[in-house]
Length: 514
Image 1 (spheres, rainbow, N blue to C red):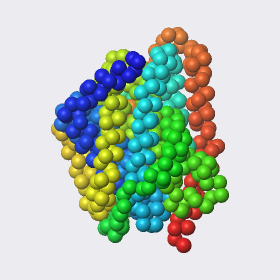
Image 2: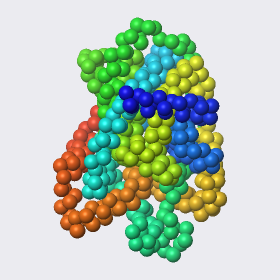
Image 3: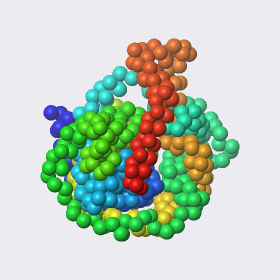
Image 4: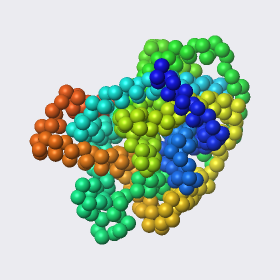
């Protein structure tokens, strides 16, 4: 009952004219960002963080805006996947398998509506999971001491590669780069300067927001410049949306699928390093094994094949907020950016967040419910408008992204040094993308590096320099076991999962070509 009363208080804070308008704007922008292949939720949120600060928005309005963009981008990514067979982000790849065949059968409107309903169900149930699970994790997190927190950060870094990573070694290299950047600035205990090279600009360390916008948004622009794309994004204009509402019998047949895949997606989201891509893949694969044992239905435009990955990736998005809010460990790339926002606002996620800033936590959760309803209502009747976004040429879209990034960062401090630093991070992000080095571990290293160092120092002080304190409690041993398992599991299973995923994509594409 206490949880429900706190949630009711969150709704009271979220139901203001300003917050509702920000949620609506965030949902609209997020859907557009998600529909554009290549941008995705991480870039959308990263671009808008400086804008939120420059507008002078407080913590609650800023989080409502950016979380609405996050959820909206997950909804929008299905549009290009279904109409063009081009996923808006990695999590929407599995939606192509049955979504595009449905569109080719003359049912694009029904496929889009089914995916919107599935997205709503997955995100809505996952938000309820967040309501009840996060406070329970907080109770466990209150048992953490400095040693346990240090091991928790090690676990987060060890699992960052995830099942879908190409190379765990590259993920660890990215973590090392992020931790090295986090060391720049004043030592938190002695006050001495580290790696500043006498530059006053670096005395306070590297700005989270400058690094985030550069590594995500601006690197996408540089990547485009290298590829020299031109023209429109596809032939969405040639495909009529047609009838929007599927038959009730079709929706009814998908209800069991929604129930099963919500659980799978939510679990994938809660586990650090898994994320929406794995949630989407496992949801599709397990559902195919459950209801299509002869292999003749999925991949040919089966509505359940559209519903399963959409429920999975949206449920994973809600699940990824659980460790971020309760433990201060992001479960995905986008939640890592949201973590940067909280830290920039001098709000520390973790167990104390629920006691020190309950208004922020519960108004954020309430806004997720509101955004889900808005997205469902918006995405069905306005789907024709959103599909027109696919016709915007990339050569026009990318300069807009660059302009927003530069203006947003400059408006925060009025410093050209910040802008140049952002460009430098953009070039670094572009280089790492070419080398297939993941970006998210760098961001997480910058965000958590100082806290990791502080907790290690505290643990060493308490134990008088005895390293055994890092394995001195059952909780620490459990976290070490999870970290080792999370690091080794992708090495063992990662290639197998990716090969299977690629095989399903190739098989479906070959079938659609014949």
